[in-house]
Length: 496
Image 1 (cartoon, one colour):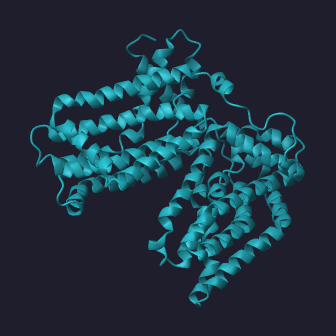
Image 2: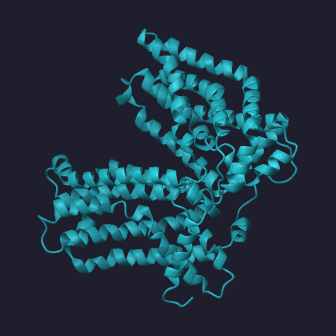
């Protein structure tokens, strides 16, 4: 591979690897559906960009449009960083086939980082920025202010792209990085609000100041180059798995007995589930992202929302007390698709297998419910609603998700990222929320119409308790359904 076309050669290899995979052909219908959804999103973002100038002029009549928009960018970059942190994968796997070739490692890492510049995250902002600049800034700006403003913002977008790689690699080495990132984001927002939006104003002043003087573009450009080379050095220094393994203590190792052993084979299945999450990239990301949803409670609940109906809080309670089960459980057997043959031939009873899944869901729902308890300070009825939701999720929805899981026979690569990764997903995964949310809501609805919402919540809770009491019956039914589709599932895991 000569030096100049190396990037194009590697990019061609990556494209061929994508289109020649069996998943690409089998997931074509899904890709068309997602493509239409993205087109719809792009059109909406473009329309928002056209209307942004008018909305900002009405919201901030005394401020310059570029300054007002730049203030909003302060919060955008914080949100963009968090979304990238949780969803954008580290570019490390695709270079593995080339490590034995006589190529400089630095050039391979340059390819990885430059290819990341083609990420959708880096171009989505243009759908809003370009129409905003053309319609609102360009007609009223002097010289090249509008162009320089756009260049400044895009340089910061790409800087954010490379900064995420450093933090994500640090997170792979030390899990505490996640809490540091969340604390830093919350602190920035809190400081800005408490100081009368001083930080966002200074940030906006810096962007508009650079746009007014073209020579100052060297500052965001220098920032981009510094972060780029820092990310390359950091990724290169931590390129081997063994380096991370030496710095991280192996969890759940040894022959020590744990509390879960008291549940027998099903308890050991729960332990294996925990190990699978901790040791693999995609399930760990899905599991981690589920916890972020609890932050929405601070926006959903509160004194300003106490007028919301019980039905609205019921839907929120169902999601919040079952978010881990919904997110992780929707691909309940696909997580083990790479070694599902071994599970089926190891002598493990499928009754214990599904009972282990049920116990894992039950524990996840219980932890989620306990996390939502502090929101009862906004109103005691929140605790009662969430209790009914927790019981229904544990006694009915957990079995419903296990049943729906027997209809999914798509394979999953555990090492890949979670964002925009629809490998292992089918149409069932997009519509499974309708029954798990709709069934309890329709149980509640008649009581609400008759003016007895508390009775509706009681009926939902009693349905959940009944489901828990007959858990053995439900598990045997799921095992029977699995046995009827066993060979289709195994064949799908092998060939998809």
